[in-house]
Length: 65
View 1 (spheres, rainbow, N blue to C red):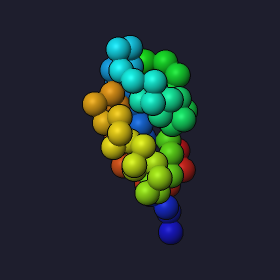
View 2: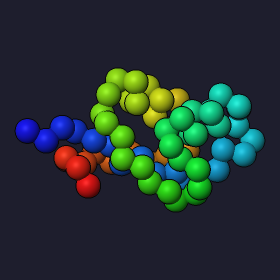
View 3: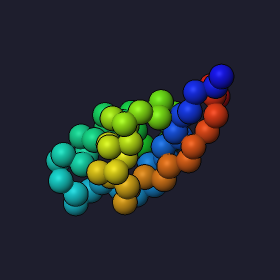
View 4: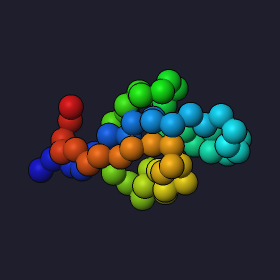
């Protein structure tokens, strides 16, 4: 059974936002605008995404890509 993954895309700059939000973006593995990363769909990652949902776009994907 394929486990759920999230494709997280960095769509808005963190300039002007708090240091904690910038650190969350980096902790998700995002470095440049329009970069996408695939993370496991865990409560920890969901919480991080919830804190920066105004800066990222999230899509659910199935399995490894």
